[in-house]
Image 1: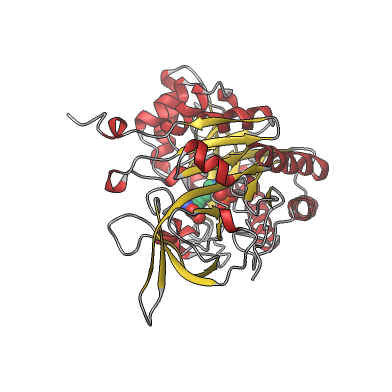
Image 2: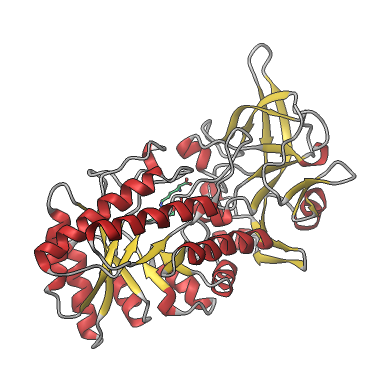
Length: 434
Ligand code: LLP
């Protein structure tokens, strides 16, 4: 089995080494050490433009919010700003990181199912653009906080449309019994709209829904649009209020392994825009501003993680393990969701993937795996193992489990490379210990 280059920014050079953005990953591992996150800045920009260009092409009033839970550090907010993206944030920490990078506060949207009063105060004080409110308690706090600052807060209400797009159950967010939002089915969605309309310091902008993750097909978005427009019409009939904004969330799919397809962003956006317009006509509603919140699909393929292979263990009659100098602490996605990964021995990328092994991390826990029974090149101690498509939910979900310092992140571009996040040191690990 030959190495598949599953994204257009991946390659194999004359030395037979795996490349990202034209850079030899074996050389990068030597220069910066491992484990190491790579982020192809050109790829992030290309994906951002694919969204902004096609959103505007097919729908005049469209806005793209980068879901920064997928990857949050100062450098990414700078790129997002330069590429004309707004940002979806879910904590004071993400807001602080964005603001520290000079990201314009009015382009920040604040999500979360349980924002604390301190979060809401910080967001209001920072003049963020919009709250995406989850529940009645939160609306009270937003209203009181805005009053304290003599402002009116822009609010979009999170609605639960009751859709399950059949992806991993742990990342489904749009079904009725979800912890997020307000269900239409139970009448609670209408109740919170009526509640918000009575609040003096809340400027109700519209509604939000998010269906799930790893969606490659427009159908779940069609379903969401149909349900949300029926709701917009119903809420209008009952209250007279017509939404100006409809946020259809994120969840656009990413190719992690060769067996998966690549997302066709233009097709998705043009199809969804068409369905939105049909619904506007059907219900006699003015075209609202449409927001999308892609996270993973903007940054995932831009990321590759490099590790050094330590021990390669074959348990006779059973299986083999390739042990690496990272694992669930820098990438918990397999341990959490059995998310599929595509590993390549970077210094042997031009040789066949005819060895079958589990890729084992270094944490003291048997569940610390990156993949099981995966085809890969025959690895030896000292080889560099590249795990592809790790730009999303890797660094942002990394921990110091087993007191492992978080890896550095190097940003790559045709115009040069630079460190975006420094490697944590042992001193960093005890910084807050008293
Ligand atoms: N908007 C909302 C309201 C969301 O909850 C999410 C993701 C997104 C946008 C962005 O979704 P994306 O386009 O990135 O799929 N840690 C998990 C994913 C959790 C996603 C949670 N919400 C993983 O590693 O797969």
